[in-house]
Image (tube, rainbow over all chains, first blue to last red; front, top):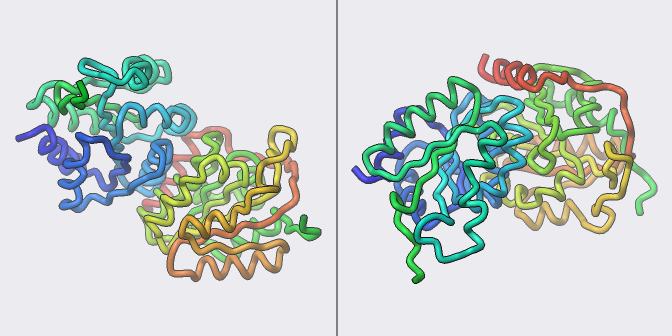
Length: 168
Length: 187
Protein backbone atom coordinates (compact mmCIF):
# COMPACT_ATOMS: atom_id res chain seq x y z
CA UNK A 1 0.00 0.00 0.00
CA UNK A 2 1.50 3.38 -0.98
CA UNK A 3 0.95 6.56 1.08
CA UNK A 4 -1.60 7.59 -1.53
CA UNK A 5 -3.51 4.31 -1.12
CA UNK A 6 -3.45 4.89 2.62
CA UNK A 7 -5.04 8.34 2.26
CA UNK A 8 -7.70 7.07 -0.16
CA UNK A 9 -8.53 4.31 2.30
CA UNK A 10 -8.61 6.67 5.29
CA UNK A 11 -10.91 9.13 3.53
CA UNK A 12 -13.34 6.29 2.78
CA UNK A 13 -13.10 4.87 6.31
CA UNK A 14 -13.90 8.26 7.88
CA UNK A 15 -16.83 9.02 5.54
CA UNK A 16 -15.31 12.08 3.86
CA UNK A 17 -17.87 13.45 1.38
CA UNK A 18 -15.95 16.30 -0.22
CA UNK A 19 -12.33 17.18 -1.00
CA UNK A 20 -11.35 20.78 -1.83
CA UNK A 21 -7.90 21.23 -3.29
CA UNK A 22 -5.20 23.11 -5.08
CA UNK A 23 -2.66 20.71 -6.55
CA UNK A 24 0.95 19.99 -5.73
CA UNK A 25 3.23 17.66 -7.66
CA UNK A 26 2.87 14.72 -5.21
CA UNK A 27 -0.88 15.32 -4.88
CA UNK A 28 -1.62 14.97 -8.61
CA UNK A 29 -1.70 11.16 -8.67
CA UNK A 30 -3.69 11.16 -5.42
CA UNK A 31 -6.32 13.40 -7.00
CA UNK A 32 -6.45 11.04 -9.99
CA UNK A 33 -7.16 8.19 -7.59
CA UNK A 34 -9.87 10.16 -5.79
CA UNK A 35 -11.58 10.92 -9.11
CA UNK A 36 -12.36 7.20 -9.23
CA UNK A 37 -14.15 7.28 -5.87
CA UNK A 38 -17.51 8.72 -4.78
CA UNK A 39 -15.88 11.72 -3.09
CA UNK A 40 -16.96 15.10 -4.51
CA UNK A 41 -13.91 17.02 -5.65
CA UNK A 42 -13.95 20.83 -5.64
CA UNK A 43 -11.05 22.66 -7.27
CA UNK A 44 -10.58 26.16 -5.83
CA UNK A 45 -8.76 29.24 -7.10
CA UNK A 46 -7.06 29.97 -3.76
CA UNK A 47 -6.67 27.79 -0.70
CA UNK A 48 -8.56 30.09 1.67
CA UNK A 49 -11.66 29.37 -0.42
CA UNK A 50 -11.23 25.70 0.45
CA UNK A 51 -11.63 26.57 4.13
CA UNK A 52 -14.91 28.26 3.17
CA UNK A 53 -16.09 25.37 0.98
CA UNK A 54 -15.28 22.75 3.63
CA UNK A 55 -16.91 24.87 6.34
CA UNK A 56 -20.02 25.11 4.17
CA UNK A 57 -19.95 21.36 3.61
CA UNK A 58 -19.88 20.79 7.39
CA UNK A 59 -22.74 23.26 7.84
CA UNK A 60 -24.74 21.22 5.31
CA UNK A 61 -24.05 18.03 7.29
CA UNK A 62 -21.06 16.72 5.34
CA UNK A 63 -17.43 15.93 6.15
CA UNK A 64 -14.57 17.53 4.22
CA UNK A 65 -10.85 17.23 3.57
CA UNK A 66 -8.34 19.76 2.21
CA UNK A 67 -5.44 18.87 -0.04
CA UNK A 68 -2.80 21.51 -0.76
CA UNK A 69 0.86 22.51 -0.49
CA UNK A 70 2.32 24.35 2.51
CA UNK A 71 2.62 27.58 0.50
CA UNK A 72 -1.11 27.31 -0.21
CA UNK A 73 -1.98 26.75 3.42
CA UNK A 74 -0.29 30.09 4.06
CA UNK A 75 -3.03 31.77 2.01
CA UNK A 76 -5.69 30.06 4.17
CA UNK A 77 -4.61 31.29 7.60
CA UNK A 78 -7.28 34.02 7.78
CA UNK A 79 -10.06 31.57 6.98
CA UNK A 80 -8.73 29.14 9.58
CA UNK A 81 -8.23 31.76 12.31
CA UNK A 82 -11.43 33.73 11.70
CA UNK A 83 -13.93 31.02 10.72
CA UNK A 84 -12.97 27.38 11.33
CA UNK A 85 -11.40 27.95 14.77
CA UNK A 86 -13.81 30.47 16.34
CA UNK A 87 -16.96 28.80 14.96
CA UNK A 88 -15.62 25.31 15.70
CA UNK A 89 -15.81 23.84 12.21
CA UNK A 90 -13.90 20.61 11.60
CA UNK A 91 -12.14 19.15 8.59
CA UNK A 92 -8.95 17.22 8.01
CA UNK A 93 -6.12 18.65 5.88
CA UNK A 94 -3.33 16.90 4.04
CA UNK A 95 -0.60 19.44 3.35
CA UNK A 96 2.56 18.63 1.42
CA UNK A 97 5.49 20.43 2.98
CA UNK A 98 7.95 22.47 0.95
CA UNK A 99 10.84 24.19 2.67
CA UNK A 100 12.20 21.16 4.52
CA UNK A 101 15.07 18.77 3.74
CA UNK A 102 15.93 18.84 0.05
CA UNK A 103 14.41 22.28 -0.59
CA UNK A 104 16.17 24.37 -3.25
CA UNK A 105 13.76 27.33 -3.29
CA UNK A 106 14.30 29.81 -0.48
CA UNK A 107 10.83 31.32 -1.08
CA UNK A 108 9.35 28.04 0.16
CA UNK A 109 11.35 28.01 3.38
CA UNK A 110 9.85 30.56 5.82
CA UNK A 111 6.27 29.30 5.90
CA UNK A 112 7.10 25.68 5.15
CA UNK A 113 9.43 25.70 8.14
CA UNK A 114 7.12 27.69 10.43
CA UNK A 115 3.84 25.97 9.51
CA UNK A 116 3.38 24.09 12.81
CA UNK A 117 4.25 27.19 14.85
CA UNK A 118 1.70 29.30 12.97
CA UNK A 119 -1.02 26.66 13.27
CA UNK A 120 -0.15 26.04 16.91
CA UNK A 121 -0.48 29.76 17.63
CA UNK A 122 -4.07 29.75 16.32
CA UNK A 123 -4.97 26.53 18.12
CA UNK A 124 -4.86 24.01 15.26
CA UNK A 125 -3.30 20.62 15.89
CA UNK A 126 -0.79 19.15 13.47
CA UNK A 127 1.01 15.86 12.96
CA UNK A 128 3.99 15.25 10.69
CA UNK A 129 3.92 12.13 8.53
CA UNK A 130 7.18 10.86 7.05
CA UNK A 131 6.82 7.06 7.05
CA UNK A 132 4.70 4.99 4.69
CA UNK A 133 2.65 2.58 6.76
CA UNK A 134 1.79 5.25 9.38
CA UNK A 135 -0.33 7.38 7.09
CA UNK A 136 -3.65 5.54 7.11
CA UNK A 137 -3.78 5.16 10.89
CA UNK A 138 -2.80 8.80 11.53
CA UNK A 139 -5.25 10.03 8.90
CA UNK A 140 -8.15 8.07 10.35
CA UNK A 141 -7.39 9.12 13.93
CA UNK A 142 -6.84 12.78 12.97
CA UNK A 143 -10.08 12.90 10.99
CA UNK A 144 -12.13 11.25 13.71
CA UNK A 145 -10.62 13.57 16.32
CA UNK A 146 -11.30 16.63 14.13
CA UNK A 147 -14.98 15.72 13.78
CA UNK A 148 -15.31 14.71 17.44
CA UNK A 149 -13.83 17.99 18.69
CA UNK A 150 -15.20 20.44 16.11
CA UNK A 151 -11.78 21.64 15.02
CA UNK A 152 -9.55 21.30 11.96
CA UNK A 153 -6.62 18.86 12.07
CA UNK A 154 -3.66 19.32 9.73
CA UNK A 155 -1.49 16.38 8.65
CA UNK A 156 1.82 17.44 7.16
CA UNK A 157 3.12 15.16 4.42
CA UNK A 158 6.92 15.42 4.58
CA UNK A 159 9.14 15.28 1.48
CA UNK A 160 10.71 12.12 2.87
CA UNK A 161 7.26 10.53 2.44
CA UNK A 162 6.13 12.11 -0.83
CA UNK A 163 9.44 12.65 -2.63
CA UNK A 164 11.64 15.71 -3.04
CA UNK A 165 11.21 18.07 -5.99
CA UNK A 166 14.52 17.43 -7.72
CA UNK A 167 16.08 20.64 -9.09
CA UNK A 168 19.64 20.20 -7.87
CA UNK B 1 -23.02 57.05 -11.30
CA UNK B 2 -26.58 55.81 -11.05
CA UNK B 3 -29.13 58.07 -9.41
CA UNK B 4 -31.38 55.23 -8.21
CA UNK B 5 -30.44 52.62 -5.64
CA UNK B 6 -32.34 49.81 -3.94
CA UNK B 7 -33.19 49.46 -0.24
CA UNK B 8 -31.08 46.65 1.25
CA UNK B 9 -33.59 46.00 4.05
CA UNK B 10 -36.54 45.68 1.65
CA UNK B 11 -34.48 43.52 -0.74
CA UNK B 12 -33.31 41.23 2.09
CA UNK B 13 -36.96 40.82 3.11
CA UNK B 14 -37.75 40.04 -0.55
CA UNK B 15 -35.13 37.24 -0.52
CA UNK B 16 -36.78 35.58 2.50
CA UNK B 17 -40.23 36.12 1.00
CA UNK B 18 -39.34 34.59 -2.39
CA UNK B 19 -37.28 31.72 -0.93
CA UNK B 20 -38.52 31.18 2.67
CA UNK B 21 -36.84 27.79 3.00
CA UNK B 22 -33.47 28.91 1.66
CA UNK B 23 -30.26 28.47 3.60
CA UNK B 24 -28.80 31.97 3.72
CA UNK B 25 -25.08 32.68 4.22
CA UNK B 26 -24.37 36.33 4.98
CA UNK B 27 -21.21 38.39 4.88
CA UNK B 28 -19.82 40.06 7.97
CA UNK B 29 -21.15 43.52 8.76
CA UNK B 30 -24.16 45.13 7.16
CA UNK B 31 -25.36 42.06 5.20
CA UNK B 32 -25.57 40.06 8.45
CA UNK B 33 -26.90 42.96 10.53
CA UNK B 34 -29.76 43.52 8.09
CA UNK B 35 -30.56 39.81 7.75
CA UNK B 36 -30.69 39.40 11.54
CA UNK B 37 -32.99 42.43 11.75
CA UNK B 38 -35.35 41.17 9.04
CA UNK B 39 -35.53 37.67 10.57
CA UNK B 40 -33.10 35.79 12.79
CA UNK B 41 -33.77 32.21 11.63
CA UNK B 42 -31.89 28.91 12.14
CA UNK B 43 -31.14 28.68 8.42
CA UNK B 44 -29.09 31.92 8.55
CA UNK B 45 -25.34 31.46 8.80
CA UNK B 46 -23.84 34.83 9.65
CA UNK B 47 -20.11 35.26 9.17
CA UNK B 48 -18.51 37.27 11.94
CA UNK B 49 -15.23 37.72 10.06
CA UNK B 50 -13.49 36.02 7.11
CA UNK B 51 -14.20 38.78 4.63
CA UNK B 52 -13.75 37.40 1.12
CA UNK B 53 -14.73 33.84 2.14
CA UNK B 54 -18.54 34.26 2.33
CA UNK B 55 -19.28 33.07 -1.20
CA UNK B 56 -17.03 30.02 -0.76
CA UNK B 57 -18.98 29.02 2.37
CA UNK B 58 -22.20 29.31 0.37
CA UNK B 59 -20.72 27.10 -2.35
CA UNK B 60 -19.84 24.42 0.18
CA UNK B 61 -23.37 24.48 1.58
CA UNK B 62 -24.96 24.42 -1.90
CA UNK B 63 -22.96 21.37 -3.00
CA UNK B 64 -24.12 19.49 0.10
CA UNK B 65 -27.87 20.08 -0.19
CA UNK B 66 -30.74 20.19 -2.69
CA UNK B 67 -32.18 23.17 -0.81
CA UNK B 68 -31.96 26.71 -2.25
CA UNK B 69 -28.83 28.43 -0.93
CA UNK B 70 -28.50 32.21 -1.12
CA UNK B 71 -25.34 34.11 -0.27
CA UNK B 72 -25.67 37.75 0.80
CA UNK B 73 -22.20 39.12 0.10
CA UNK B 74 -20.86 42.66 -0.10
CA UNK B 75 -18.90 44.50 -2.76
CA UNK B 76 -15.79 44.73 -0.56
CA UNK B 77 -15.87 41.03 0.30
CA UNK B 78 -16.51 40.02 -3.31
CA UNK B 79 -13.56 42.11 -4.47
CA UNK B 80 -11.39 40.51 -1.79
CA UNK B 81 -12.11 37.02 -3.11
CA UNK B 82 -12.76 37.41 -6.83
CA UNK B 83 -11.26 33.98 -7.54
CA UNK B 84 -14.22 32.43 -5.72
CA UNK B 85 -16.46 33.49 -8.62
CA UNK B 86 -14.41 31.26 -10.92
CA UNK B 87 -14.56 28.46 -8.35
CA UNK B 88 -18.37 28.77 -8.17
CA UNK B 89 -18.70 28.88 -11.97
CA UNK B 90 -16.67 25.67 -12.29
CA UNK B 91 -18.81 23.81 -9.72
CA UNK B 92 -21.99 25.54 -10.98
CA UNK B 93 -24.56 24.26 -8.45
CA UNK B 94 -28.06 25.12 -9.74
CA UNK B 95 -29.34 25.84 -6.22
CA UNK B 96 -26.90 28.69 -5.50
CA UNK B 97 -27.61 32.41 -5.89
CA UNK B 98 -25.03 34.98 -4.82
CA UNK B 99 -26.46 38.41 -4.06
CA UNK B 100 -23.84 41.15 -3.91
CA UNK B 101 -25.04 44.23 -2.01
CA UNK B 102 -23.02 46.89 -3.78
CA UNK B 103 -22.97 49.94 -1.50
CA UNK B 104 -19.58 51.05 -2.85
CA UNK B 105 -18.35 51.33 0.73
CA UNK B 106 -16.71 49.56 3.64
CA UNK B 107 -19.80 50.39 5.65
CA UNK B 108 -18.73 48.83 8.95
CA UNK B 109 -15.42 50.70 9.12
CA UNK B 110 -16.69 54.20 8.47
CA UNK B 111 -17.91 54.09 4.88
CA UNK B 112 -14.60 54.35 3.08
CA UNK B 113 -14.94 53.80 -0.66
CA UNK B 114 -14.38 50.34 -2.13
CA UNK B 115 -13.10 49.68 -5.64
CA UNK B 116 -16.57 48.86 -6.99
CA UNK B 117 -17.03 52.40 -8.25
CA UNK B 118 -14.49 51.40 -10.89
CA UNK B 119 -14.80 47.61 -11.09
CA UNK B 120 -17.93 46.24 -12.77
CA UNK B 121 -18.80 43.30 -10.51
CA UNK B 122 -21.57 41.91 -12.74
CA UNK B 123 -19.20 41.94 -15.73
CA UNK B 124 -16.52 40.24 -13.63
CA UNK B 125 -19.01 37.56 -12.54
CA UNK B 126 -20.13 37.04 -16.13
CA UNK B 127 -16.50 36.86 -17.21
CA UNK B 128 -15.89 34.17 -14.61
CA UNK B 129 -18.58 32.12 -16.33
CA UNK B 130 -21.59 32.90 -14.14
CA UNK B 131 -25.09 34.01 -15.04
CA UNK B 132 -25.07 37.61 -13.80
CA UNK B 133 -27.85 40.11 -13.22
CA UNK B 134 -27.91 43.72 -12.05
CA UNK B 135 -30.54 45.65 -10.13
CA UNK B 136 -30.79 49.27 -9.04
CA UNK B 137 -34.28 49.35 -7.50
CA UNK B 138 -36.36 47.18 -5.17
CA UNK B 139 -38.68 46.11 -7.98
CA UNK B 140 -35.80 45.25 -10.30
CA UNK B 141 -34.12 43.27 -7.51
CA UNK B 142 -37.23 41.18 -6.91
CA UNK B 143 -37.43 40.33 -10.62
CA UNK B 144 -33.71 39.60 -10.96
CA UNK B 145 -33.60 37.51 -7.80
CA UNK B 146 -36.53 35.41 -9.06
CA UNK B 147 -34.75 34.91 -12.39
CA UNK B 148 -31.54 33.96 -10.63
CA UNK B 149 -33.33 31.38 -8.46
CA UNK B 150 -35.02 29.93 -11.55
CA UNK B 151 -31.77 29.81 -13.55
CA UNK B 152 -30.42 26.29 -14.03
CA UNK B 153 -26.96 27.00 -12.70
CA UNK B 154 -25.25 29.26 -10.20
CA UNK B 155 -26.19 32.93 -10.61
CA UNK B 156 -25.11 36.31 -9.27
CA UNK B 157 -27.29 39.37 -8.64
CA UNK B 158 -25.35 42.60 -8.12
CA UNK B 159 -27.71 45.02 -6.38
CA UNK B 160 -26.79 48.68 -6.04
CA UNK B 161 -27.78 49.82 -2.54
CA UNK B 162 -27.23 52.76 -0.24
CA UNK B 163 -24.69 52.35 2.58
CA UNK B 164 -26.67 52.00 5.81
CA UNK B 165 -25.79 51.49 9.48
CA UNK B 166 -28.44 49.24 11.05
CA UNK B 167 -28.69 48.64 14.81
CA UNK B 168 -29.69 44.95 14.59
CA UNK B 169 -27.06 42.27 15.23
CA UNK B 170 -26.93 38.48 14.81
CA UNK B 171 -26.28 36.24 17.83
CA UNK B 172 -22.67 36.76 18.95
CA UNK B 173 -22.12 33.10 19.89
CA UNK B 174 -20.47 31.79 16.71
CA UNK B 175 -20.61 28.13 17.76
CA UNK B 176 -24.33 28.51 18.52
CA UNK B 177 -24.99 30.02 15.07
CA UNK B 178 -23.09 27.12 13.48
CA UNK B 179 -24.83 24.42 15.51
CA UNK B 180 -28.29 25.90 14.97
CA UNK B 181 -27.74 26.14 11.21
CA UNK B 182 -26.31 22.62 10.89
CA UNK B 183 -29.14 21.12 12.93
CA UNK B 184 -31.70 22.88 10.71
CA UNK B 185 -29.91 21.58 7.61
CA UNK B 186 -29.75 17.98 8.82
CA UNK B 187 -33.24 17.73 10.37
